[in-house]
Every structure is written in structure tokens, then in C-alpha cells.
Image (cartoon, rainbow, N blue to C red; front, top):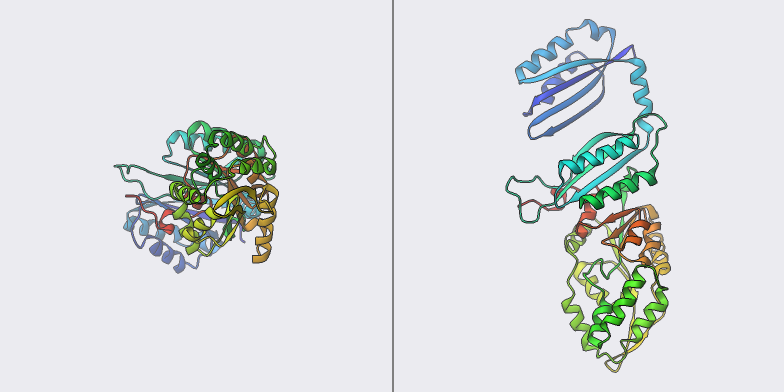
Length: 411
């Protein structure tokens, strides 16, 4: 490099041909382009071009020609000379770690954006880029709007990596108070190459706990519900609590299983998420402490590739109050996730795990992206990511996918 770089900053109303015309001027003068970036918001153009400022270029009418071309195009252009030392420092910073903060909810207000930006600032991070992932919002809002914005940030100064625990805590507190979801991730190659999504079933893929509904059919609903809630909070040993609950189902007719299948709805967003994941070539799995009879129904309906759950023993058309070994508990879920990843030849960083209960934490912690979905407080605290106010299809935003890429359009 000679002695400096020249930053060409173009603003104005966007129109077809602006970039082509200005690049053509640079080409006529033999300018070497070092960097280029462009953004358009509601036809407002912001275009930046960084070129090497050689002695020959200094002596040429390049800037005059660019000004004349910009005037013809109806845009504004200004020039900033960048010293060689500043440019080289900028080049060295390209290896610095980058972070992604995804904010999503029914709506995002200016206050939400201000708070997120403030938290990043206090953590020593600079916002490099902001992208809207959700569809454009009409002025007449649809009945159920959705909004998602993704921030890309990096350390504002060399070596100024943030205290990630403190940053995650601050974002989680802000999200809880603001009624939105906020995820914090590393912008890494793994994030762009996820391959498997493993779901818990009860209270994750479906709205409710199958064992509680079976207990209601058996007349032991309240007793089982109390045990389930304590187990999901992590207050009881899962295996012991599970056997205790299943024992209370003894004598239940097999026909009750179908009645439960028919009345428990899918979680909102589950079908859209599964459909999109299939289209994009992801593998999916149900790793559940629930029952296979319901899991098989979901597997067929949603096109799930792997199913591992517990088998409720039924003899002569009656539930025996027993469950077949092996029991799928928290440790088993984590091990099954490892096995599926190994079978497919994937790194655990390429895996996503989603669940709501304490028995999901082992798999949430080993997955590259572990998501506590509408989870108990202890589970949210133990997972790196949490979705509380969004449907299951909010996971698509955490993958960096835009609504226009997944077939969702605002009404």
C-alpha cells in the first residue's frame, strides 16, 4: 500500500444503477477497491467504498468525476482520507471475535433497541451491523405481528472481549422486563452450519404434558401434576418421579391414549419450523421423557427423523403402570444427542437442542445451540439461550434466517 486510503461515502435516494455508475468511474481511473458495503432502508441509500489512494490517483480528477457523476445520479458523495496506520490497524482487527444479538417478539419498540444498544456499549462492544430478519411491517398492523432484529457486534478496542456471563445476564434481565426474547451467540462458522435440531416433546413440541393428561383420565390428575411440576423444576429425581407417576396410571384403558392424542395441540410455530427445517435439509429428533405412542404421531405429522422416548407398557388393552427399560432421562437425552451426531458425522456444535424441563438441561448444555423454550426459571438460568415470548418458529431467527427465506410474509 502507498500512503493512505480514501473512503467514498455515498448517500441519497436509492435507484437502479447507482453502484454501477460510480464503480465505472473508479474503473476508468484504475482504482483498487479495498472494501465495499451498502445498505438500503426504505429507498435511503448508504454506500461506502474504500480505495487505495495512490500518488497517481491523488493527481487524477477522480474525486471531481465522482462528484459530477453523483450529481447526475441525484446522490451525495463525500470523501475521507484514511491514514495508512489507521487502515493497517483496521486490517489487523478483522480477526477479532464477533457476536450476534437477536431480539425477537410480537413487536420491538425503540426502548428495546435502546436498552440492547446500551448493554452492548457498557460491555465494551461496538455495533457493526443491524439487520431486520422479520418481514416488513405494514402501518396497519396484522392481528399477530412478529418482529426480529439481529445486531452484529465486536470489541470496541483491541483485547476488549466482554464478560459474557455478565452480558448474558443483563440481556436476559432486560428481555424479561421488556416482554421480548434476546439471544446472544458467537458469530462462528458453526452457527452458519447447524445440521440437527433435537426437541423435547411435552410442553415443547406440544402444549402440555401427556402423563398429566393420562392421569386425568385415570382420576389421578392433580397428584401426578404436582409430581410433574416438581420434577420439571429439578426438585425430584426424574427416574423415581417418573416411575411413581406411571404407577398411578395402572388400569387405564388403552382407548384413553388415543383420546389424549386427539386433544393435546401442537405448540404454535411447530409445524412451520419442522416444514422449514425439512426443506433446508436439517435432520430432526424427538428426545423425550414422555411416551412413544404420542411421539410416533408427532414423528409422522412433522416428518421427524429420530424418535427416542419411553414405552408405556400395555397388556390386554390396559395400562399396567409400568414403563419399559431403558428410561429416557436427562443423561440419556444428552447421550442420544451425542450418538445421533456421531452417526451423522456432525460436531455437537452443529446441533440444536430445545426443551423446557430440568431433564433437558444436559442436552441443552452440550449442544452448540441449547434453547430453553418457555421453560421453568431454573432451566432458563441453566441454558445459554431462552425463548419465552416467541413460538417455536422463533428458532429460525436464531439461525439467521429471514422471513422472506422461510416463506413467511406479513399480511
